[in-house]
Image (cartoon, rainbow over all chains, first blue to last red; front, side, top):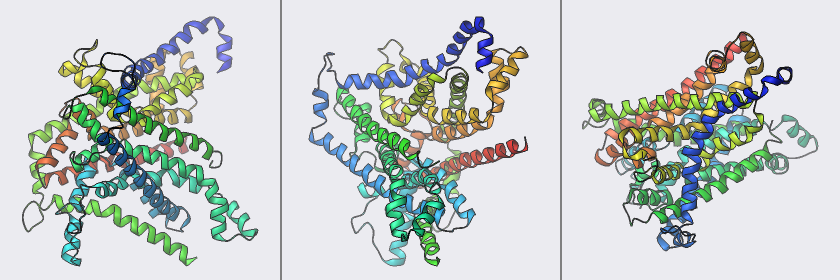
Length: 294
Length: 262
């Protein structure tokens, strides 16, 4: 590659121009349809309708209704991220370290690929058909076990229902991300630990978990961002009866509620800030994790 | 070590119950439209609904156009970056990660603010403009997946040699990209394409906020107004997701086979 460039120094300049023309459409597109729209929102969050710089919009985020929407969103995202990590880890550990047949492992990985992409509106429908008032499991529990799910205060249109639904894409995502990390745990490490007299629990506590720690925390952050940005599932499941941040923003954009675009900017900015922090943590920890998992 | 195997199976079985019950529920519910018997009545009604046909066809066409636009944007960029502009790599990787970091609802909010009827480029004012904007939005959402797949594909072939060979035979850049590079990374492009298709086909937020009546908003409308049809739609959507992921596995396996042979 370098030799061909060096042997043709005269042709270098027009050629380079061609290279830049080759990547220009990408940059133009990214600027127009990704960077400018986002910047517009970020700048708008710090401007009042007269165009002056202000922190007033961000202050409105602290109003009780908006603050509680963000808080529910954060709780929901944290809970589903933590449970997604836990259950995803257990399933990944089972298929990598548990002597299970090869076909079962491959089947679970493939299914995880499907389930992590089976989000949005259809997922909400599947859960309504399962845990709704007349759902499959609701009826099963009532007819076979005499348990009245809705009588006990459960509803699919609730925090708990939403959390159960989100786990359907959170757990598989964890399985997909953490399985390679678990496969990267070398057999020699375990053997070395055992030959030094470590028990299974000691091996996990002192060798495996410290190695996996960045991956685990990083994936937790990624799952948080994943849940935080999910809008379609929540809207299809609850309509707008549960006030979480993305639903409030959706209603703001639609103009259903009090029409203050700058409040919309502020909510959007709050969402970007939270997902950016979460993803930043993910990327940083991911880089650390890759030192060990090759 | 019987314990280990038992607990592994136990974990997988518990997971299996959680993941299969909603699928069972969705299939069961979709077939209960006629009282007292299982039938495909809900599917028949959905498939015969002109609204379904229209919105579904629209979303399929849009997904295919998104894939074409994604290929046009990503393949030349990834190629030139790998071959001659390696310094740009971190910048491109950062940009292609952004759609995963910024929530889609924020991106579409930005579109509505920038391209509204009182702006310099009033895309939302016309039918064509709105559809183009939706297409661009979906291409943006697809960037991370498209770029990652194509870049992985480019890594496995020797693009420097291929390019020199093509140039020595007198090919220009356009010809090299379409006749030499694209066929060589076709399998990777296909994986990105199927993933894009799975994401775009039922997308709701972009379409709803741009007031486009595609498959996503149609599904939500059905969910609010009908009982059994939404489950039938969910089954259809699940089948499409499954098919896309299956096709990705199939083409990757095929590519492994062909490289092994070579």
